Length: 72
Image (cartoon, rainbow, N blue to C red; front, side, top):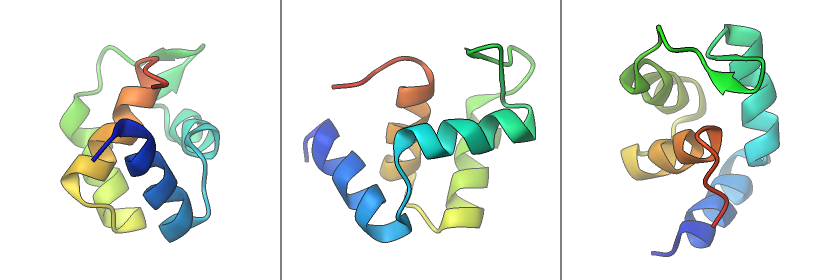
């Protein structure tokens, strides 16, 4: 599955774009000033995405990748 397919599937399932997830992550303190909070582990973020939005591991990692700046 391509990266874009992951993003498209996430949007179809949750109705949220990567930018929407970024705003939610900022509210939770996972992102501070457009940077990932260095004290937060990737697992904390992916677990949040899995629990709150019922994403699978690969889909959660795709959103995490967008937080790190990957867009394609």
